[in-house]
Image 1 (cartoon, rainbow, N blue to C red):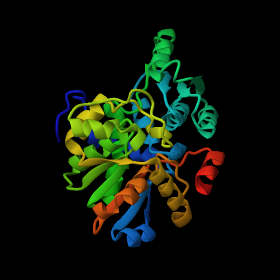
Image 2 (cartoon, rainbow, N blue to C red):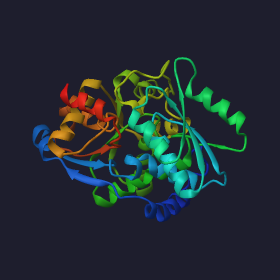
Image 3 (tube, helix red, strand yellow):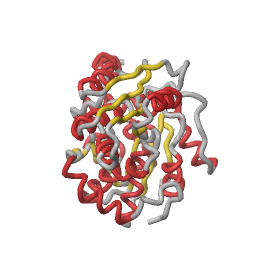
Image 4 (cartoon, one colour):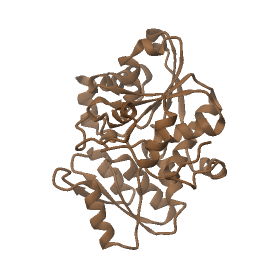
Length: 322
């Protein structure tokens, strides 16, 4: 295991502790062999789907680990939806309260889910005020609260690493494809692989319209998008990777594939038609990556992480019928 300057508490003993305790609070991921894609692309494709995780995405792993580690009872966070839902539900389970700052453009189903789990939603126009600015305003109004980071935190990364543990307990693929937004999930998988001393390549799948992580990898330095990217993958509309996530990914990920939105939606439609699996666009990034660069995966055992399934029904119908 490497040591991390931005997270000195991210130690092997801490990872072992989380791996021992956290799975009792989780639903195991669903593994689905994809015979159609396997035959089409001449590789062995297995889907690791977090669509049936609590709150419908992998984010619950991070949220529960984070909130169970802190003494504060009031939580403030920013999210386009999935992390907000996870924070709201984890808060409910742990007897805490939360405010979730969300863009007005967030999927209606995600806004309603945060409310249903007991969270307070604070909607903003991101062109007038950024998520970070609004969270700072709320923190000044509630100085006793805890500001919950969606990805740039060792407790978040380690919570997400439990998915990697499940994958490697199941099998050892040649490649794991994982969606990349802020980097919390992808860095968690790197941590799991390194902790278990596996040789699997981890490749990120990032929306082409918001390709800050791919550009960072090419340039060897953390870079940012000028504004929240306009991509169908709403869970990846991030300005940049977190600092900890970049530190992990810069030396732990093999590559990051920039996926056009058209291929992401092709992946979404594939999952519905051939796997009977409802996937949100961000979750379909890995399928889009496979479809956009098929020669790259020929003859390989590939695990595609589908990170969540929370999508507005009307929007989902339009994606399927496009």
